[in-house]
Length: 479
Ligand code: ADP
Ligand code: MG
Image (cartoon, rainbow, N blue to C red):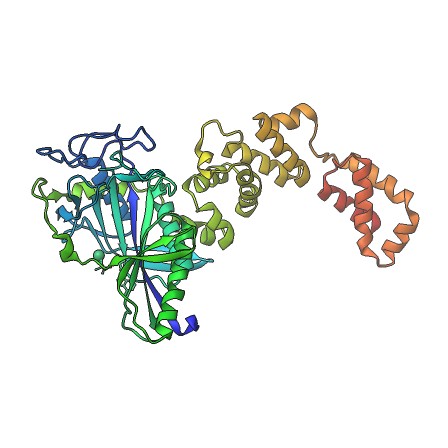
């Protein structure tokens, strides 16, 4: 099979739960994992006569997202009914947006293995989520309406994605972005971030888009990668056989690692969209947009550029620091308090701090054992030579365990490196005198023996000699 003959063309429709306390059109709670059907109300249950009222906080979150990706925010938009039948949809329609979405255009910028990518957006619109069907082992099915009415944005991309990996990284970038904006927890295990992946193939060098298949409801980065990868292979095999790809909706089965046809493609007219008569048009004025614009934090991609351009960090390090807002915030606070080069500080955060926590978002916790200023203090002690690198790491471990500051541990236990030049010089002289043969060999050209002398001095001083000072003195005595 010749996958290489084809170029993959991928567009993603990503659904994100917006973090509001109450639902998009009613007052019941959006909390996850509650007793089934305990977070419901007449509106989200679709009871006759119940009227939706739009949640302003939800619109604000979507406006901020739109501004962050450079969308045009429509000053006036509308909601529409999208009809379909399913047991988890008691109204018989979803309230979505159709011809007049809240946000149009824009783009998401991110990287794949350090290389910049840009995926244009078609639109971002608001809608309500459906409930959830639960299928029991005994063959009985239940419906839990707690999720019904949870606010969603759907982020529709242009077909700008070209590989399975890029699709996964695009999704990752969106998760980082919504978390940075504080508009969603982006929790994929809880279904707060999921996507439909549209995939088609065309021969390299051709323009015209091929027929696409849509893979529904993918809920992890790994599954996006696998599902798209698998779909590319499946379509390549179909085309190689001289057959045509059927436009359809498929369901990815992560357990078996394959997809199955679910239904033939539905078309917009199947949904009988019409303007939602129970909601007035939504007006977002310039004032609102300006306020939302001012509320935006530094965005991940800008941070990444600041770290690589202004601070000279490697793509790899900047990528790790910018992968969660809390890591970058931690770095920024430490960096302000620290005289050491950014690269040194980044190493400490990546190798020591992140190695000790499983969820980087914990870095924002108030009871963090080593807050950023405490790390800055330690890193400076190492950079100044008060502590050797090895001692510094030991002390970091103890700071984490005992929640103590570096300065305090150093002061109370005299663990610091000895920088007393007189004392070090005395020991150096003693060592030089004790190894006359090595001195002759060193002077005869075996300059590597310097390490031997440094080692002896270190041993004599219990590892606490300032290595830089010892080096300088030995060079002088031997030279
Ligand atoms: P539909 O009418 O099937 O809903 P849309 O034009 O609304 O299709 O696009 C839905 C998603 O599919 C978008 O993310 C879009 O970028 C993507 N898409 C559209 N056409 C193709 C194609 N030929 N190949 C891959 N993705 C596509
Ligand atoms: Mg569509």
